[in-house]
Image (cartoon, rainbow, N blue to C red; front, side, top):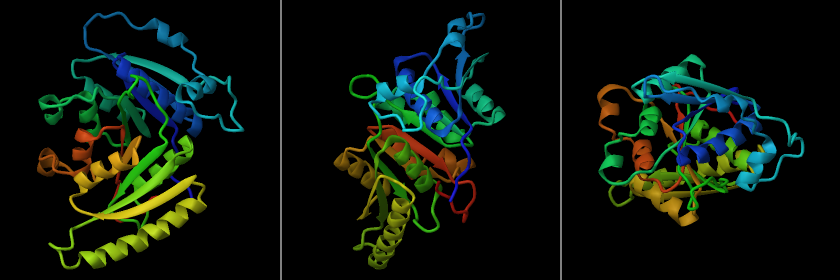
Length: 296
């Protein structure tokens, strides 16, 4: 089975320390997927001089593997430079500029840093990263600095699933990421509490069966280690609790890309997870209802 090709990875940067960690992951994925990495900086100050030094930047697979503490693949060329393109534009609305550039490429994946603000600033979803996540047409990986302010490999990946059959995009992406980082993959289905919903026990049984099939399929597709669980409760709360329990380094969720009022209300599980997750979050887009993702 194959999934959509990843040829162009967009890395928007504000040149902050948070962006540095995200760049490491963007470069690692570009190397693993054989993609071109587009480094994109928006100048908000008119007349600000361009960053000429970026054009001379050379990053190799060996550099990135060392930063993440990951082994190089046997077939890797350690000293081969990652295909890196730098682009700068001047704009007052940074998020809009990023989204336009992503659409122009078009980007297959966006990787960007987030400052992980708390309190009112985070609740208002005012950050550039959150605006990009909400409106991008492609998957978005938001990366927060680790405890040391840098980048760490994803070793425990949690993917929250609405369904296991057919295979949703978030499962296919999680499998690719698990292989890229040699990580353990945790599959999670959340069903309604049985005391409130008499059919929940049947829903739980079906969820277990679906996850069992998916677990076996992912294992046969080369995912290093796959475990699964079914839990009852509020989806966003259960995802957060499970992430903390397993020490998740990355949470993968799906988004149906709702428009209009339904999007403005910000009631979706994925947006709640993005607001409150203690670790990086990968948001996979559902391109069309009823379409199954494929795993490579």
